[in-house]
Length: 218
Ligand SMILES: O=C(O)CCC(=O)C(=O)O
Image 1: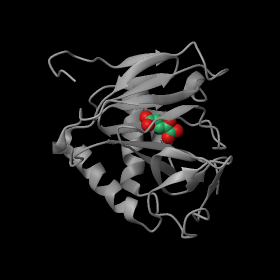
Image 2: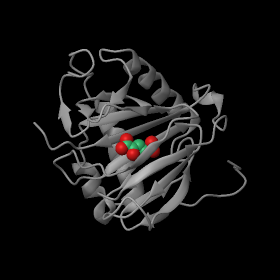
Image 3: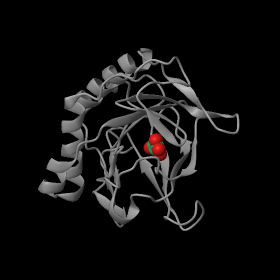
């Protein structure tokens, strides 16, 4: 990504905001360090098994609640049965700052209390098909942070996983928020541009994506 060309914040669809370069290199390094620790346990990062027997090309580890297709649980029963790491307070605070940055709504940001995060790691071949985040029992926004290689992020509509959609690039440090009328929009990652990340983030290759959500579960 050419830093000489400014990338202004943009509302890609109603309630779907892209804020380029929101995280500085030092913050990205901290996130990489935290994600590395979560990737080792108590539940190790893995390729999620899909209900029809396939596996996702992305590797995922969760904090707060463990996600697998259609459900959140406290223990990772499809991996090693252990309880996932707690959702740390610093990540709640980061989620609130992200929401404030995207929407400028102080009250909404104060009230935002994400309780799960999915940490996805993409190598150059990994993809994520068009899907809706709808296993949560809450319509609170999803806050997404990217570190490492740039990817193509596809933001679609709430009705179908096909067109109309908009393709944007998510680069290291970018914030994306899916909320409001776009909270349940289909979205996906059709491509990762290998080797575009900055090793100064601590990630030598690949792409990390952290999505914070409110499960609505107790
Ligand atoms: O990697 C991304 O930017 C998107 C991740 C995503 O769609 C998800 O975790 O549901």
